[in-house]
Amino acid sequence: MTQPESVNPAPAAAPAPLDVSALVVGVLGGTGDQGRGLAYRLAKAGQQVVIGSRTAERAEAAAAELGLGVRGADNAACARESDIVIVAVPWDGHAATLTALRAELAGKIVVDCVNPLGFDKQGAYALKPEEGSAAQQAAALLPDSRVTAAFHHLSAVLLQDAAVEEIDTDVMVLGDDRAATEAVQALAARIPGMRGIFAGRLRNAHQVESLVANLISVNRRYKAHAGLRITDV
Image (cartoon, rainbow, N blue to C red; front, side, top):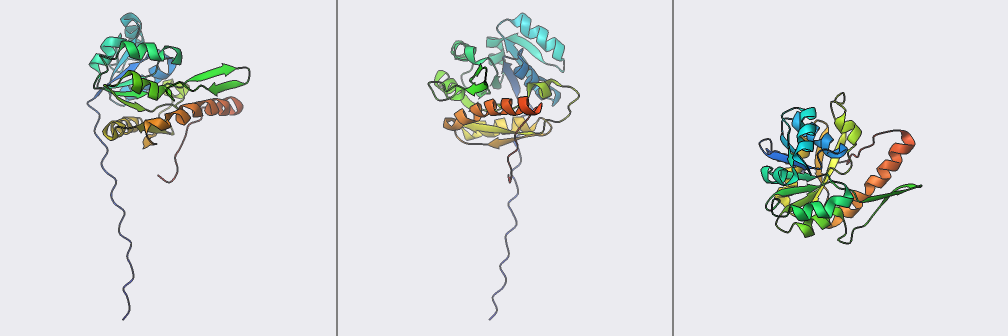
């Protein structure tokens, strides 16, 4: 008896992305290049955005320049008023900033995009924090927050350039809380051209943060604003 030919089952439909459009996104360090660029892109995509700085006046001035409904506040108010908080502060102020905001960030999804780097005559090189990575330091300092790591490999120049309509890159998202990482993936996907890709647990954040040193070298050699794409996903 002839056996029927096997039929490959149809691929499972991809799950519908989470709807994060109603969440308020805070950006600590929102007056710096990276934070300002992320705030601009998310606000342009329709997200409610609050940028934080050490002084409310500085944040409010930066928010007024961005427009798009972006609000400015001091760091504590920014953290309190937001559902998801992106940490885009300089590495040398990372620990102090998060320590001071532990209460305000409790229960929040915290997205650490800080890259611990050093620079010398040979260029950029990765630093390794005692905790293993900036994201792991954040998790240690914020035990009541849902810490993730993402948005490390984005060009601040492209993010802030209004003439660039799409950012052609993937965003590697790491974390130990699945619901939190899925929310951050969905947030990344709000920006045209971007995808959020789960890239492992928080213990793997060091090599993701460190890769920025390589991208800086690429950009300098080729006069580019390089990003990353994950293939076959």
